[in-house]
Length: 501
Image: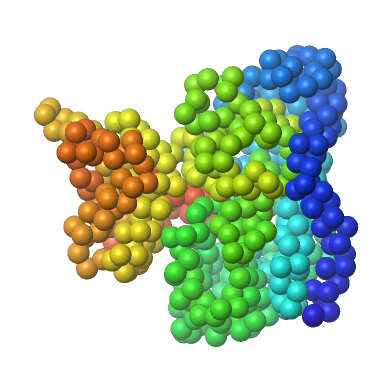
């Protein structure tokens, strides 16, 4: 066992015991998070207004505090951002994670308290290291440096002691010195606003260094890696960084990109680990490389609730962790030590296991197509696309989809805008395979497609390479943690892409 990996395993031994304990005693640990949050919250403006000092159990909490989203909760976060303290969390909140999300054009400002920073946001990466050392005891991944392709919002001063930036900028500001030594590129490079300029700088700065791992969103990292191959003239990344071992990824489904990564990392030693990390918190880590799900981290100062997506209009259906079932699509609701209370984060998940609690991300509460009662979610879309690609030898770089509305006597359908890295030989065959796969994935879609009852065959529109990048750049969302919206319930994104094409 390499010396550094052995040392990390020793240092993580007590943490592994804590993880084992919450895996075996999830309700007890979640109850402790609940008590901690209620006690702290009762000392805030929000807590006094909602009578948190009277709350003894989940039922009382749910009866006093409504489920909220960013727009409705912003009246509290805005007060904090304007300098008022103890509004949503005791003590000073001086950091706000600036996030545009995947819908809307206005920035969101997500509070990051000192407790949230240390108990959640920075605890997640430590546990990633812990799992890595445990799962791969012979790995040399800790001997080199980690390349992180973060966001581009430099820290802004928005008040006397209030700062905002995207989450990666906040983490850079608060990373201990010893950890900064293991991370590249340097902060000034990592926070270059222009994505293309940043990638060029990364090429110049990192070539020749001993990079053993990298982390970030799969799509933008793929753009960066291809740029590095172009810059060096090499055929694969292992010719640039021969000791590269690991990609820690999150932010989107990795499956559509995996084959492309395997081509530029032609080694069976390459390891992939998914994490669920957002501006609102760090929530889950893939702790078994043979499975595609992630372990829900239960002791990060987060109390979880879950609302079936079939009941989004009836918030009384929300249940704590003890009430979830496998195979149900849930919207995730969080109460956190960052000062978010019954906050609908916007992601949808499904439990793959309840002993221990493990999840997979299925989409977004606002990212679906249900123009005709078909209820297509991102998980359906990506599974169907993967099947169509496997059967035709195609590879997809990016895609989005939306409805084609009924007009006069014409029935409705879906339009898929797809950018291929390897296009299928026959696009009509690909379209038919996609349609059949969607019918297998979603019984509502199948019913609408039966004999063209409501929905006609979908339309696949192929766009030239680089179209999605230009689209995202035009919207000010190139690079970093920005995600391409995959599904939308109207034609806004479809029309924007068609206009570009």
